[in-house]
Amino acid sequence: MQLIFINIKNMQLFPTVRFLQRILCITGSLLLCTVFAMAAGERPEQRAYHEAINIITAAKQALGPADRTGNIQSLYLQYKGQKYMDGQGKKFGTVTDVLPVETIVAMDFKSGNLMNETADRYRGGYLFHFRTVYTDTAGFSFEVPKIRFSGINQLPVSGKQALQQNVLRNLPLFLFNMALEKKQTLRYHGTVRENGSTLQVVSFAFSANLVLDIYVDQRTRMLVKYTLNSDHPVHGDQTITWAFSDYRSVEGVLFPFIRTCSNGVSLLRADTLTEIKLNQVITDSLFQQPSGYGAPVVLPTRIREIGKNIFMIEGLNGYNPVFVAFRDYIAVIEAVNGSDEAIRMIQQKFPGKPIRYLALSHYHEDHTAGLPYFLKAGAEVITTPQNTAYVQAVNRAVHSILPLPTENPVKTIEVRTLKKMTDGETELQIIPFGANSHTDEMLLFYFPKEQLVYQADLLISTDQGELARPLIPLNYELYRFIQEHQLRVKTIYGTHWKEVSYAKLEAAVNAAG
Image (cartoon, one colour):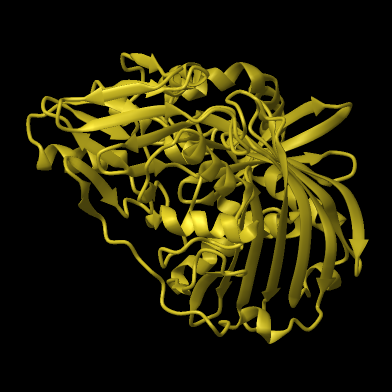
C-alpha cells in the first residue's frame, strides 16, 4: 500500500519518497507536538489538526472584529503592478524585462455577481485587455478595447467558483475563511524562521488537486505568504509563492496593499492595491454584456493546405502551427500547446513519413510548450543560437504532475544565416529576423514559390482576418524586414489567428506615414 500525505512544499498528494525529503526539516516540531499531545491525551495527528484550527482562527480574528470581517456584502479592488517577463522576455534566462499590468475585481456577494478584468502587456506593443463576468445564471468574457476580438465568449456558470476562489485566495480574510470551511484538511507543521520572524506553517486542501501551505507571523498573526507547487509545461516542477505586506485598515478590516508572486528563482509579479471599496454599491454595468459585439469566432481544428506540400493545423488550442511535407520527411514549425495532437494528426495524414525537424521561431512559452513531444519523436530542433540552452533546459525539466516526456536525446541546428530546405519541389527558407522589440532572436519562415511568409507574433490579425489597429512596433518591423530583404510576399500567415494580405499591411504602414 502506498503511503500518502500532504507535503508543505508540494501542492499535490505525493508518495513516500517525498515524505523522506521532509522528515528531517520537521522532526523537531513533530517531537514537540508528540510531547504536548501525550500530555493532553491526544494523538499527534489530532494535535496538529487542532493547533492548525487555532492558528487560522486567531489569524482571522487579528484582521478585525467579527462584525466587520463577517459582514462584507460587496468588494471592489483595483491593482496596479509590474509583471516580470519570465518566459516572455527578450532573452531566455533574464527576467529584467518589466511591463505594467492592471487588475480590477468586483464582487457582489448578495447577488452572486463577479467581475475580473485584466490589462496585460507584452513586448513589442501588445495589449491584452479582457473582462470576465459571472452571474448566477450566465458567464461571459470579451476584449474590452476590441482590438483583435469582436465577439463575446459565453462561459459555463460552473467556472465561476474556480475564478472566485483564485481571486479570493489572495485576500487573507477570505483565504482564512476557505481554510476554516475545509478545516478537516487543516494540519500544523511547526514553525520556521524567516527575516527575523517566527512563522507558523499550516496546510489545507484548497481544492481536489491543490494544497496550500500558509505562513502566519506568530507575533502579529498576519498572513506573510502562502506557497503551492505547480508543474509548468516549460519549467517543470516549481514552488509558487504569493507574499503579502503593508497591511492597512479598510472599514475596520486589515488588507495587504502589496502582494508579490515568485517561483523560487525569480520575482514574477508585484502588485499594489490602489483602490478598495467595501460594502458600497457596485454599478450594474460592470456585470452586463456590452453592445457592439457579435458571436465569438472559433477556428475549427483542421489540417489546411496553404501551399503545395505546405500545411497549417488551424485552430489547435487557438494556435496555427505549420508543417511541410518534403519528399522523405516532415518539418514542423512551432511547438505550441497541443503538439501531441499535432503529431498524431501529421502521422495520420502522412503515415510512415518521419518528423525529422522542428523549427522554433523564438523561445517564448506559447511557441514551445509542446517541445518535449517533438523531442520524444526524435525531431532535430532548428532554432536561434541563444535558444540552444533553452531547448536543453526544457528537456531537463522534471514533471511530477503533467504527463510530459522528459530527458530525450536532443539535437539542435543553430540558424545564424539564411538556411534553405528543399527537395527540389518545395522550398522553405528560414531567415534570422534578428533583434526586435519582442525578443532578441527570431526566425522568419519564407516560401518563395508561394510568396508566403509564416511568422510568430510579428503580426496578429483580428478574428475577422483584418489588421489589428492601431499598428504596433512589431508590425512596422515586419514590413521593413520584408522590404529590406526584397521578399516577394502575397500572404502573411501567423501562429496566432488568421492570415493577412501583404497589401493590407503595406497600405496601413503607408497611411500611418
